[in-house]
Image 1: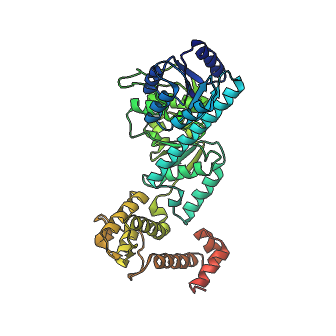
Image 2 (image 1 turned 90 degrees about the vertical axis):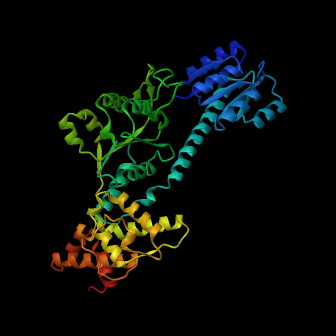
Image 3 (image 1 turned 180 degrees about the vertical axis):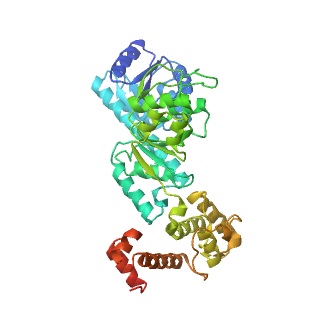
Length: 450
């Protein structure tokens, strides 16, 4: 629900405008002076300010300048009974988004308010986008041509267009948040906010406030009203990471919010309605958590509408060369240097490691390697944990090779093995490899495996 602050020294205008805007579903607060308006904004910033132009002690222009000094993105509409061009120009120069002349038609004011709030939402979305760009993470970092990943991508495409709640499961470091962002970016809500909350990073009290917001004075330190993540994500997607860590007492409130799409802020009694798509993620086995009594069964079923399980890196090692090339190029570019090659011995270590930390562990290892390496990444540039004896995968031939050569070498060995296991029947081998028969025939011709 959008909150509007009206500032006017004429009490009648405050009453009339409050009734009009509240009748349209807005939450309205009023202030008889600029000083009182600044105090209210300090406690809880509104989504829009409507202020009179001429008021005693602090004019509308002076108020706008003060508001813009605190938050340049806060939209302000100015009301003036004089309607001169000079007044409008002065207000716009001070930072007003629009102005309206007294007396005005109700519909004219409502359209002006609607335009201003739409602009506010665009500013909020742009801010969220800037934060995402700072993180430097997006769907383009989901690297994978293996059969397990192709299955994941296919399910993402199917579920993205729906409103269904999605539960993403998988070990830590498999890229659950990236998949959640991919679902959002391919959905009809792509232009709306994507808001992520790590449910494990906050205490129960702080998490409740983070999710649902709080009213002023609801607990020590609550100096003003604050919107929660559910409100910020309205019309968009809310990503609940590590949802299995939510305390049982808070699970009840979350379940109600998911079922009814309404909730109350901490310390509040007003029901707030939102339109939010939920994508949750966990590395826990929630079925076992339900059996153990630490996770509500009804909440589990509410979250588990569509389940998407991400494979660990060890189950898709054919993606390792492409992942390695991507991370090496990424960190080399950040350091302003040419991407180093990977020695055969270093590649053996990469293939031989079990990767309990999955893609995140691989990325960290290669970031370190790019920092330490010269023109070539050697075993000494990798973390000491990556020992050959931890091998669980077949290493490539012991020769110097580029990433491209490593990919080709792996493809050749996989094709040979699949053909052997299929007794030379190409259609069966293609099914085992997760490629079409024509694609297999092309690769066999490319590598001279006819």
